[in-house]
Length: 169
Image (cartoon, helix red, strand yellow):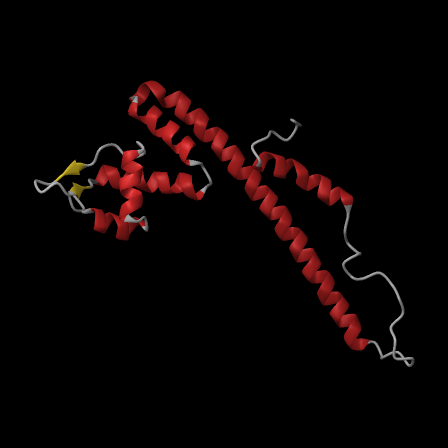
């Protein structure tokens, strides 16, 4: 990799805008970037590695304030390694809870799709009513709605909202 990259090159490689890169520097997510003689920012390989990590934090839903706290701890060097690890462990637990909630939602969607496919198969094989009206009955959406599923989902939703599964407000 080149020894230094312009803000435009970094923007292209990271997908961040030049404005966002300057903002990240202004709020302390990125340490002051070295400058060329003309004053243009020059990003080093280490800056790119840090930006890649910040993007991972952002992609996994860490708020800017959390990223700033992590960056402050990082600036303290090895003295803050334990705190940084603990912070990342807590964030990972939140990400895992969101993934679990998404997996449960995907499973519910798949079940509903299978349910509709089964109904479509039945509808295609049924003969039309001689009277021209269908008998009154529950809709297909009334079926397969279970309270245990909803109760299972609630802990994950509380975790997503920043609460521990057992803590109620």
